[in-house]
Image 1 (tube, rainbow, N blue to C red):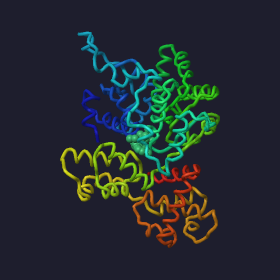
Image 2: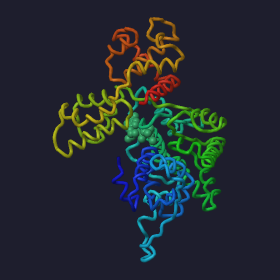
Image 3: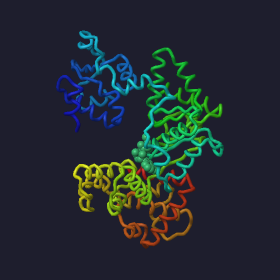
Image 4: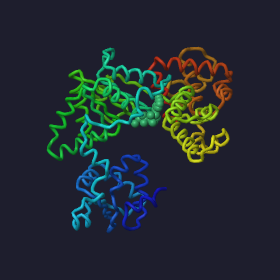
Length: 459
Ligand code: ADP
Ligand code: MG
């Protein structure tokens, strides 16, 4: 738990339910949001079931009240059932009153940046380019559509590109690549890039400042609007509505909108019309990378890091860390920093030792039985049909998908997978996996289905 660390910044006195609540909020919202908002919150006191929390500015107070109070209260009650209400107050800055020096506490650096934010003048991570995006079966369509759009080729008749994947698969990378490609190749093309969270922040701020018309007008001058992590604002009524209005206005005047999201448009908490508007765009999925792509990505990362690691170690990582590119990166970065610190060449054995935690996290074994269960459910067939020898297409496809998914998400050998698939031999399993990889390179619906199955399996 992070309680001890958080405690220093977020409470004047010891009140464990508050520290535990902060831990939960960090887990629930992730580090970036936690740092933007919750790190400012200081527990002051609890009196008659009323918890008093203070924040440095009025703006943060409004923001927290509008967005997070119910979650804060709900979590606090889990640890302290006597809590009835949570009040957020602006704390006085004694230092400021005395000296008139701006206090560091007033705004975090990120908020200062957001404050000045111009949607057309954003900073991109120079590493997130098309050149550094390694392409394989699971991301081929997404990468090629993104590049075509960035090149402004008129071969895409959709005005909305919707990139969907679970976390750590490369959505932000692709969106940033689009933006930086446009900035370098056609700097006159007006591209706006912002996270959905930033969109919400700017929109609410514009309302507060009575300036929402300017905000709206500015957005509508974009030739291409890129919004990352759409899921963040879904269900947040007015912001969501404003974003959808913007999308409609832009696409109707033939401008492009690129959105990324961790789920399909149909799973979003939106009304049916909005869902079908988004789903009517070009929806592309990035699925979990297969072994070949994992290995290629690792090789590309070490080249970027200007270091070398032997192939058997890269194979160890590619075999054992299967769920996302982000985790692959985490593993390779850990090894490289170990090398740098110790100045040693790593052997396979040392690598296994260093990566034991990373690998263990992945080895929380998913059984082949659960793969069969989810695949059968997704295709509306019975597990015994998948395990049977029946050759009807209705059963062959799920059988091949089960082989592919089992290889992706479990640690079992091809023989073991074959056995569970109804005593099929190792060559049949390889053939099935190859077939699926091949189909995935052109069949987006299949890629989407497989992604869904893999996320249902908790990977
Ligand atoms: P998401 O936005 O889907 O959560 P990111 O775009 O942040 O994922 O990707 C996580 C990390 O993995 C980033 O550092 C990104 O550069 C890297 N990454 C993802 N896909 C690829 C790829 N195909 N080639 C190279 N790096 C990748
Ligand atoms: Mg992202």
